[in-house]
Image (tube, rainbow, N blue to C red; front, side):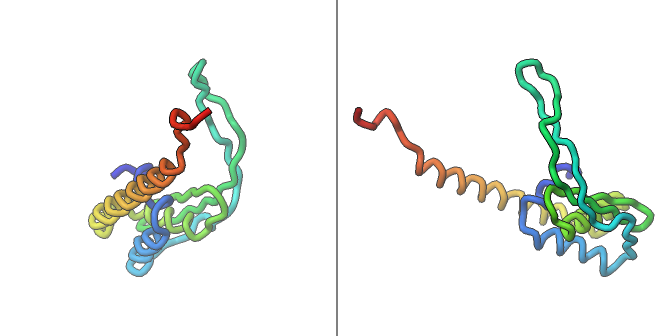
Length: 140
């Protein structure tokens, strides 16, 4: 599983999953905090569709953290003030970079969480569609 997909699942999904995975590593390996979770700002890029050019739409507040596990550096960046999640993402990233044996069993958990997220989005979409107004059936 690619890093971007894995990170999206961990951010959008149940927060307890990221905590569970990072604690597996913390209990078994030495984890050195290189950059403590801290807030910062980053520019957000958007693509203008008519000219297909990139531009910066503005800034967004982020929380970032870096850790080292088994001589591999992991980074965690998340939108908003979420220090614990940023650190957990960094630990998970470092574990994957170090190819620790625990990461092999995480794929199944991440896939299950991805399915749960998709089902929740489908449910939300269905609820929104129930409130949709059909103008064709309205009398004028």
